[in-house]
View 1 (cartoon, helix red, strand yellow):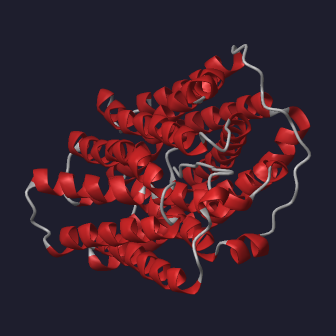
View 2: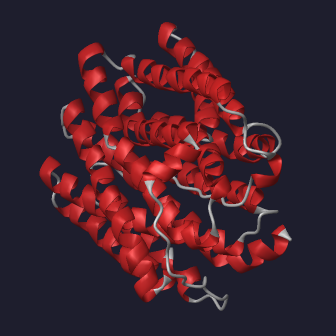
Amino acid sequence: MIQKTIATSWPLLLGMGVLMLGVGLQATLLGVRGTLEGFPTPVIGIVMSCYYVGYLLGTLAAPRLVHKVGHIRVFAALAAIASAANLFQATFVAPWSWAAMRLLCGLAFAGIYVVAESWLNDRATSANRARLLAIYMVVLYIGLGSAQFLLTLANPRGTAPFMLVSALISLALVPIALSDQPTPTIVVPRRVRYRDLYRDSPYGVVAVAVAGILSSILFSIGPVYARLRGLDTTGIATYMAASIFAATATQYPIGALADRVDRRAVIAVVCAAGSAVALVITVIPDLPRGAFLALAAAFSALVLTVYSLAISHVNDRLEAAQIVSASSALLLLNGGAAIAGPTLASSLMGAYGHEAYFATLAALTGALALYGLWRRLRRRPVPPEHRGRLVSAQLNQ
């Protein structure tokens, strides 16, 4: 029963929701503050990309830490590191210090995501994994979307927003540390090789990587794009919140559809539709504000489902002992690809203007859609009885 699963997972879901308030505010705050400080757009892109370098390190270290000391201790230690890193960013406002702390935050949050995913997979069954995944993603996106409006509570030039980020990350520990629910069973992890993952699901593996690039551009460079487009602080918060909240409405229905038909077809259609929306924004730069926000929200609502769909496709054949290792391997792939996102988008925007932002997103989603159609011609879909055995979720911030 999905209700029973949620009842045993609510401390994690609540903690992750609070954590996303801090994560979402941090990413937007750094982008806005960087432009206010006069940092060049490519420099901001490099700073934001450092998060994903740390992300790679975190995905490598987290499985061993979880196996050694348990889920709750790892969550608590990494949240404390991220909280301290944000205080350091408030004290030393310079690209080099932000880059170092951004890397540290990436390491911490990657480990937290590994903990969360393995925890949820331990609680889920083959009958409710897709729905639990959808609920998890909705919680994350509600937290991220709500965080955007926290930016309007204080001047981005001051230290107060950084203090708020630190406090929220620390508060995320409370429901998990005080919960009386049993923690997941720690099993000896079985190694998962990329060669095997790609052999079983080439499109799923490629989609995981592209999803990392897409999400890193949306979350890291989105505020910079909005600022260069001429939006004020409230406008930036509204733009980011609309984009993130829109994704909460599509997670469950698109996930349910992917449980019934070929997941590759769903990914391809979602990407094709997203590419069309991004092209409209690119070729019509003077859209009315309402139309622009609606189209930007529609794009995010579509493409922010790609990672979950791809993970569902890849993990259809995984076994219980592979849960933590597979989560780490796929997060590593996703995070490694995400390193390129902010640098790629910011460099193109520096060369061709802010219009290159959605042009880049359109090219990426269009290419993934075409590759998906080609893969469907090469291999039959996974039989329905083999779907849903394992599902993972992650949110690149």
